[in-house]
Image (cartoon, rainbow, N blue to C red; front, side, top):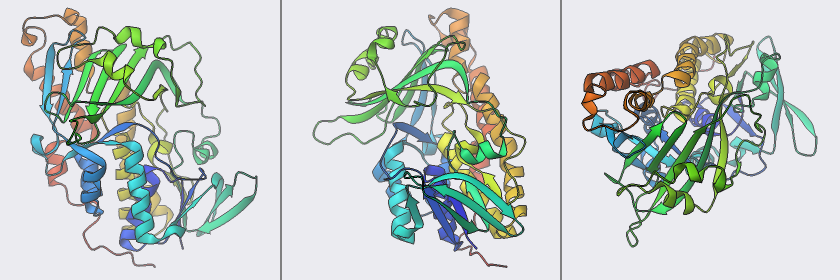
Length: 424
């Protein structure tokens, strides 16, 4: 029997690669007609990178992204608040990565096709629903011409994103994604890397935040790298927004004037914004945590299960971890309802905590404390906020999100090396 995966994004492809690694039959169904690289920069914590390395993707990751060295906070006036090392430099046994989401996605897709064959992924088929009866699960599909079909398997996995059809079937009375008033504008620009050359920086405070980090190595001739940047402004959440047009071309005048002052000797936000070939606008949305992701022989993963605000660098990583935890449950309990519940019982509480924490106490909240206490202007940061307070906030977030240094380094592999699936 087969694992039927609805959705060929990062989460769904990570599940497919993990199934293939241990010999579990699977099939991926993706709604888009053609796989293509979409999105902008994302970050992967060492806990997620560890899983990709365990899939044998270390060399491939180094071709699509860079190993992040440090992560720093600065006030809107450019004053340094806090910097902490990342990945190997922080003491993890695995690096942190900054990468273009589209390049990572296509790397996973091409690697899956290379390992499992082109028939492993069927494009152009959108999941419309599921059914489970006895020891069988069914996935209902529809193509762009309106043709429908039904696939039979052992379990159905909904990896179909924040607007998941399978989640809607499980939760028919759930409201639309939650918008708290934050709007993001995102782009990439060719520019010289700043600070360490592999630094991620957050500048400003709640309601006015600029984020930037490189997602490629510098060109050996020009010295220019691809710099990913994000602008974040807060609006009245009572305003309407076009949730169905989730990533649309932006008008610079809607946000650029607010970021003109973010220009220092080491970072020029207005120049980065103006230098982008394309700029996209995103409402920053999430979904309330659910009490359950599983109905019969169907469950959810990734953004379909636990879409959270994009702070803390754990969105894609959580989907990758879901994939590995699901396969570990299949190895222990077979392709059964029990396996789905074992996976859910472990991952749902963790990801629910992240959703709620990212709304109010993400790792960048230190900047809000500084802004409130001194307006972003000081002579000595430790007169505003003690070092120990900043360090404890950073450590608390990592522990709660499940990627503390000791926790990541000391836990056994989610999937043991050489593990193979034995059908019942």
